Each structure stands twice: as C-alpha cells, then as structure tokens.
Image 1 (cartoon, rainbow, N blue to C red):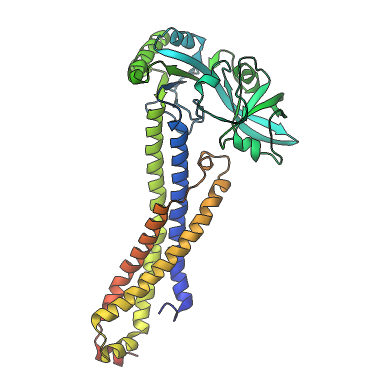
Image 2: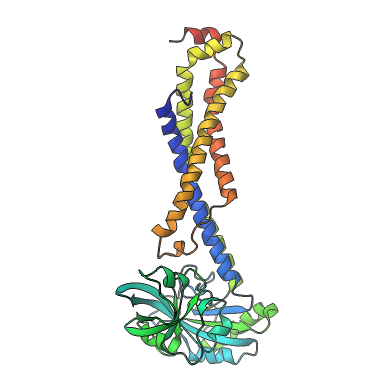
Length: 402
C-alpha cells in the first residue's frame, strides 16, 4: 500500500520527518548546552564563591558577568535610582575574614576588537592579574596566563583565536581592543570569544567603568566543607558594612553548585518546552498517517474482500494495515533522525554569538532511540483504528464495494 500510492505516502512520511528532525535538533542543542554548563561549572571547584551586585535568589543564568569559569553569579538589581556597586570597601571587609584565602576582583563589558582590518564585538573581562592565575580553572592551550607584571597584554578564548577573524590570532600578535593596542600572551583551551586583561587596563578600555568599582568579586574559601557557614558569615559582614538587611540586601553570593543546579533546572524546563512544541509536528504527522490508512482501507476494500474470501483471517488483515502504518512511521523516523543530525550541526552556526551556540550540539544514542521509538509508536497508534475497521469488513460487503 505504501508503494501503491507513493506521493500520498511520502507526503504522510514528511509530517513524521519534520517532527522527528525538530525533536532531534532541539534535544541535541539542549544536551550540548547542558554538557558545556556542567563542564564549566563543574570545574569551578567547591571552594569558589562569587559576590555580585544586586540581590537575586536564583542567580543570573544568562547575564554574562563571569565568575572564573565565565558564568555570572549575580542577578537582577533592586529597582533604585542609585546604581548598586561593589567597591574596595567590600573587598576590604572580605579580606578581614580568616575563612577566605584568595580574593579576585573583576569587571566586564562588551568592546570592539579589530585585527587585520576586521572589527567585531567581544566580551572583555578585567581580572586581578596577581590572583587570577591562582583562582581561575581555565586552562591554557598555548602561551601563558596573566601575571602580576603584565599591562598591555591579553589572554583570549580558543574560538576568538581560531575562527573569529579571517586569519588565526595567535601568541605575540597585536590586536586593537577599544582603541588600545594589546599583545596576545595566551590562548585558552575553550570555545569562547572572551578576552581577559589586567583590570587596570580594562577600566580604561571598557566603556563606563570606574576604577575601584567591580562587577564581581571572586573568593576562594579555606575549607570547602564549611562553604555554607562561610557564605553566611560573608553575607552578615557585607550586610553590616553596606548597611542593608533582609529585603534591602543589595548583593548576591553564589557558589558553583547552586548556579549549576539553577541553570540545569532552567535548561531542562526550556528543553522540555521546546521539545513539546516540536512534538506538535508528530501529532500532525499522526493525523496524516491515519488519513492515509483510512483512504487505503477505502481503496483496498475489494482486495480485502478477496483476501477474506480465500481464507485470510481478521488478524491477518489487521496486521497488514498495522505493518503499513508502522512502516510509514519507521521510514519517517529514520529520515527525520538523519536530517535532525545534520540540522543539529547547523543550529550553533545559525545562533553564533548567542549563549545557545556556546555548547554546540550533541546527538546522543538515547535521543535517536527515543525519536525512532516515538515515530514508530505514532505510526502504529495512528493506524490502529483504520486497520481494525479493515479487519472487520465482511467479505460479501467488501466484494460488492465499488
């Protein structure tokens, strides 16, 4: 029956193909992003805390102000006419706490970068170069990290080095950032377009930055097993210094574990929502399968009568039509998996420059098995009613049908 009405069958299969391809692509994007989040946050260590201006119960997910691994820890600031800031006073309060072993300050922003005549916008983070190498978990692919004597030098992300410009940007090459010339001393082993430079240079390179005002303060605690107690003590000390309490708290302290749980939960909910939308195509495909099978029953009514007249049982007729419905679902699923795998490779390119492109995509065997199983299930379910109707046709009525 599938081969008898090729055009109708392929149009029916197309509905399954679109649904499966969409599900595969979305699942691969979500898996890739989740894997990247776990990889980057998992490497932050259990002894790292980030202090950010503005109070947020959950922490910012896509805010972009980075902890040592590149993800922001703060959140929405309380609505006020005065900008909420972290200053040297806050750093001094933290330095007086014996529970903290290292403190690093950071500022960040978006700045134009020019190399060999091509200009683009990248994320620039100013770090305390005397401490950054001891607190960051980023690894070097080539060159070195920043040290205490550095000034007009930068460390760049792997993607910025390899593919952002027409030609690779490597070690000891000069690049213009925000109108100032910098020499590249290190390339990170990652897939980011980030730039790291000494915080003194960043304060004059990034627009609207003030010396002594920070976007994030990163601390390493002495005892990771006392993390919660240290967070409580930090909150109390900063609240007292900043003269805030309870609902007026204007800063956020987050750990990598909290941030990872928040982001993972949000990504999971987002992926589920997008997959549910993509699954609507499978429902449309199921309607198409049912319509095709009902039409096939009408067209094959006389043949059904002949088969029953020569001894075919109801079960045999039922299985013939169910097999055809399952075949449509399986073919649609196989083609959909193939196209979805190809599409998943293009999505990060289409979303280049956004948070969704940073994790790439990852097609897993489980997503393929689930998609094929669902497409097969959809085909069978959609074919049950028309197959049952075909099996219940009386031979005499079927032979008389015109």
